[in-house]
Amino acid sequence: MRPVPLETIVAAVHEVNAMPHAAPQPKAMQEAEVLKEYSERLVSKLEEKNTELQAKIEALTAEIANRKRAEDRYHALFDFAPDAVVMIDQQGIISLLNRQAEAMFGYQRDELLGQPVEVLMPKAFRRAHVDLRQGFLGNAMPRAMGVGRADFLGLRKDGTAFPVDISLSPMESEGGIVVAAAVRDITERLQSEAALREREARLRAIIDNEPECVKLVDKNGLSLEMNPAGLRMIEADSFLQVQNEGINSAIVEEHRPAFSALLRKTLQGESGTLELDIIGLKGTRRTIDTHAVPLRDERGEVTALLGITRDITEQKRAEALLNGKRRALEMIAAGAPLGESLTAVVRLIEAQAPGMLGSILLLDEDGVHLRVGAAPSLPPEYVAAIDGVSIGPSAGSCGTAAYSKETVMVEDIATDPRWAEDKAVAL
Image (cartoon, rainbow, N blue to C red; front, side, top):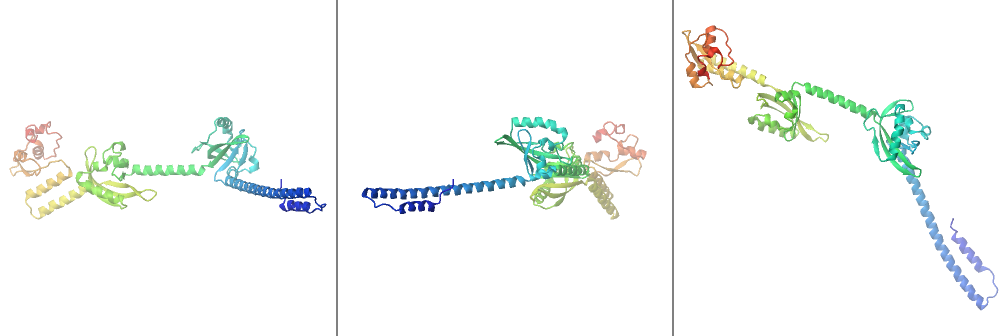
């Protein structure tokens, strides 16, 4: 219904009022006045109703325009969504799809509309999918399908299959439930994940076969990870023995402050090196050289210390032996007393094997007795007891060696027959 133009109504009223009349009688004049007043009220009402109707028409027109714009936006969003979207009715028939679906599966839109959705999957899956689809409609709710599975496949028009993730969203419509299936091609993601796993496997193989200790230590000095070489270095059979244990527990007491300083320095973003001694779980003492670098997260914040550690025990012993030999030769060359030179040699040998006590015995001029040349770590009582002992076939280790002029090795003084007469003194 269209509103009657107000000008038409007013013109009609004026036309009625302008019509020629007979000379009014008093009663007729009253009726005319009443009719005129009624006509004016009618015109006013008509103007009011016409204004209301015009406003409603304008509001309805604006609403229709808004709905049209909203519908256009919806279709634009649907058509240009980043994922392929396929709408399926209760019979599994494709009723709508967007451009991404066309591009992903290689079909024109008209080729898929009205087709069963199973046309988009390999033939081997189609029969089973019909049952799955019907089961889903019996208990429709949003859910995902095939997340991250390489064997959950879509099928292109050209017959090539490709892995997909699918998100299902059921919706009510006038014709019943329809399902929106958002399909994502995950080929590149799976390839990236496989490449990442391969890189991680290669890196793990490198770290596990690295002859030096590789370890991660957190801000509190706790062990986060350690490779097999590191576990061997601290005499651990598995990482479980040291997991979340403070690395300080393996460091000798006198070197712990230096390591704590290195940890603080590294967590502040600096690299550093440190030589220190550790004691393994089985009691072996080692000297190690650690190079520490800060490990940063994706925001650039330091979260841990990455340490590369070498066992330099043998290197330090070799250096100490070389330096000791040099000092002993320098003492001899300088004419130092024989006792001092021999004492330096014994201390040098003892330093190569912690816990060992050594002595050097010299054969007396009579060729029968041994004299103590140096025994800096042995008890004075024992030194006094062996000074002047006679050599012979059963005269302990040194006496037997001097007698036989051969090297003599004794594993247990208490049971070796060459110590039968003198073991009480040694033990």
